[in-house]
Image 1 (cartoon, rainbow, N blue to C red):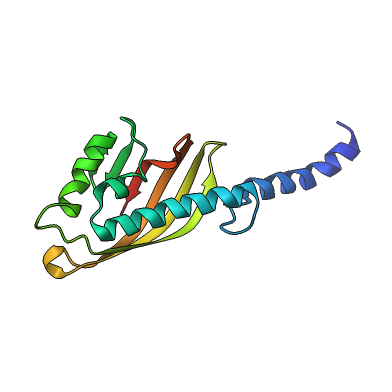
Image 2: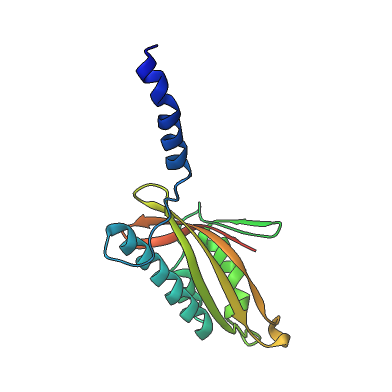
Length: 159
C-alpha cells in the first residue's frame, strides 16, 4: 500500500467513527421535512392524550395503526393486534368505573427508521385519583408508521 494512503487511514477511521456515533435524531422544531414529521408525530400523541382525558377510546386509539401487526408491550405483557390493544385500554377509558385521569406526554427524541417509520422516545405522566390507580409515570418507546392515514403507532413499549 502507498505511504500516502497509509498516512490517511487513521484520519479516515476517525471520521468514520465520528459519523457512526453521530445522532440521527430528528429536530423537534424547524421547517425541514424531518422536523415536520417530528411535529406530526408529536401532534398525534398530544391529540391522543387529550382524547384519553375525555375518556374517548376511539379518539385515543386513532394514534395506533389499525392492523393485526400493531403491538403493545408493558412489563411482561405483550399484546398483538389493534383489536387486542383496544380491548386492553377499553376498561380504563369507558364504563361507569372508568376514571382515566389526565395524561401528558413529552416527546424527547424522534429518529427516522426510513422514509415511512420513526422511533419515538418520551415520557408520560398520568394524574388520577388513588381509587383509579393513582399517579403513574414512565418512559415510552414507540415505532410510528406513516401511511395514507398519517403517522400511527405500530409498536408501543411503555414502562
